[in-house]
Length: 312
Image (cartoon, rainbow, N blue to C red; front, side, top):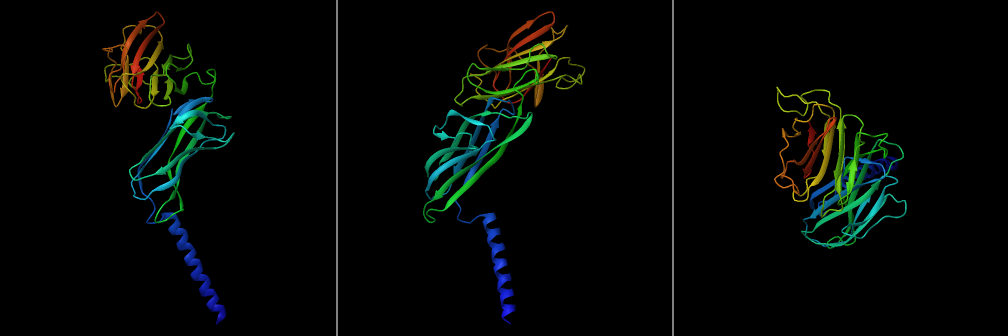
């Protein structure tokens, strides 16, 4: 009889343990609530040893005060923090995988935003690498001292070789104002460079990818038009048209002098001339320079971001 009681007690304890684990997995009903939990990592392709921009945010919508808040960002092995962060105050132990950004006390309605610039390095390339983050804090009344965390979505980027000899047709970097990133000149059918604009962000993520054309209709105007140049894909977050990214796109070949520059991003159209050579057309690129040579044609373009493809 005692043995059966012991077995029954063991079953009850097991059921209780499973229930507790399930409860922990779904969280408590009185957990502090957040919305607008977001994150981003760019550029989507980055040369090893170059920088990326990671951003995360949490909007606190509950009414209890939270204390000792911090954003903890988990970075790949070998990645390092570039100072300053935004807001300032982030730290990273030497060779550590965690960047910690102290955020103090949180109140209802606070929007916690954190941006960091990171140097992305990899010993084996190309490789897809992940950055993760969580907001950590302690609860106030009615659960004083209870530690909690809220994760933001994980984000990835592809780290490629730093050598243009290895990666002549791809490049990526988070650009400071006036800084440039470029693919290799005189290799393949094109060469692309981008100059960073003035920005309120820590830097401007830009990636460049050039692909040889396999189909005369890809990224081209509708038939009967056909395109002959490489397909150049540029990628950056939407920025300020009054402070545009400056693109220089060179297409190599003969007979290109009178062909228009075409872009495709949702719709396909010819790139118009800029009304003002210092600014971009909002949501669309425009060109402020066009130089035709015997073996190439060069376009100078103002671009405010997102991810169009260019061709001719």
